[in-house]
Length: 273
Image 1: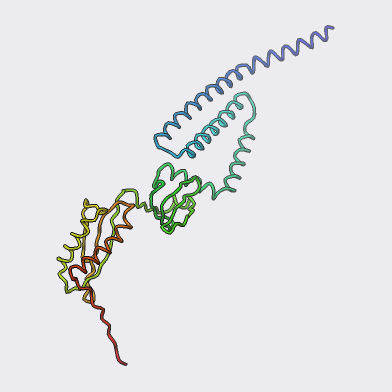
Image 2: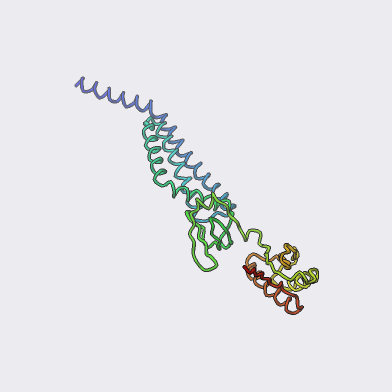
């Protein structure tokens, strides 16, 4: 009986010793866990408000908040486990190796994802803008996390990877809201060029879609073979630019016909051998 009693006392002493050793650790670990979870929640709210101010895409905002929350919680759990005394070296090594393997396997997709995040944050263009990038011109119909969709003038849908787009040159025709068109016309050098320019300026200034601030400009840019090339530069809203360029050609034709402005005479030289 004495032996059994001593054995029970020994187990009780070990248990009490265990409690004395690990209770402070457990209290500290759980304190860090609860405070950490509260801080992560607060940080997520602050990040959400910052993303709202940046007017980020809803899908991107949700994804980034989830990624941020999960990442911080993993770090918190690893920290708490280390405080309790659980070995975390192997766990961190496994996570690092898994992350490296996934990164190598999805290298192209991750590049497009990173490009999509940059495009949605810095917004070099938005849905509805007409852009030129990667040798393609079209109106942006959708900005996805991995791809950007363009609709061309002949109604073709072009899918561009965001990685290439974000690392390449982007020409945004809609960013400023106004574009300058450029139409070249050729008249005979025998005409009074100042008069031709004045007639053209008067006619295009009456066009409803042409903006008069800045005012249209007409320059003589080349003379060759008894012909003068005039460059008509008029400003209009981005969405009206194609229509304006087409209308300027028609306006020039009517001005030439109504005012009997001579076209250059084509000259052909024939050499007899």
